Length: 115
Image (cartoon, rainbow, N blue to C red):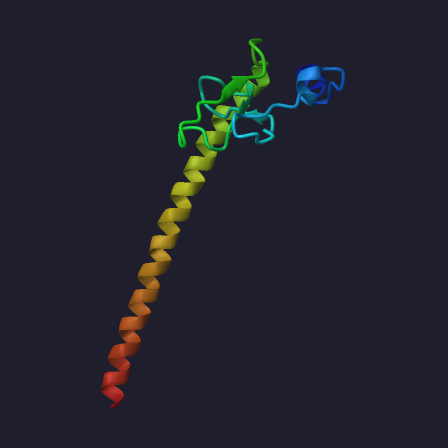
């Protein structure tokens, strides 16, 4: 049932907000985005790519309606998983860098002994 509602929300061609042409003060055509924050999971919005810089303050929510429960449940968990994976990737990259440095040191020592 929730899946049907989510599909309807995403595929509702009669919803004028899904086909709205929204531009910021720079004239940039903005894409409809989805919030991944804990507070507003699943809410749709438009924001200028220059938001926060160049004195651009353009930000607009698509609507004021409540977000479906499925999105509110899933999106924060996906954000947490992405953060966990980013942390794991960072740790592995540091480990790889340490191994490369160790290998370089071993090669340098070996070359010195061979000379």
